[in-house]
Image: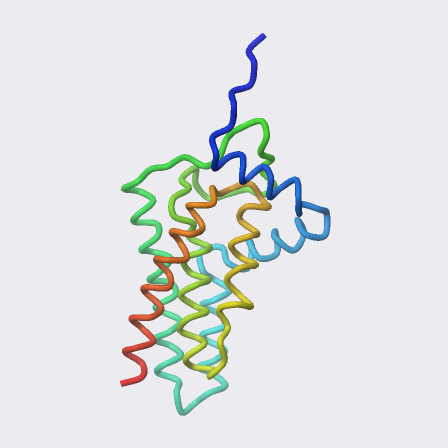
Length: 170
């Protein structure tokens, strides 16, 4: 009988997060965030809603919505280059299906952070603290990303979001 391998430090952190907060209600919320953020669809829909409601800035909202999809696409491009596999260790439980086996960076983290940064500029409210940490934590709770996947995704999304937000201010 093979002895389970010792987890890497990242797997150990991921398993610790799951042990600490993966309760039924948290997992349900994480799955809801996962479905909302899948392929950036929920964030794109919110951008379209903004365009419908805020007619004077319709073009900015549409640009923001498209940028969120662009951020998602950028993360997919990076995933295909890096080709890091999703976590797979006996100490980690995968609690949601994923569209691919590639992990780095987290596309959910990328599109969520891009949306939070761009939509913060459009709403005049800092949405980042309310939107980004829950999405990043959800990817760990669900066991589908390493901590560096979500951090890299957030950094990519922040960069794209900041570039778009700066353009919208002009």
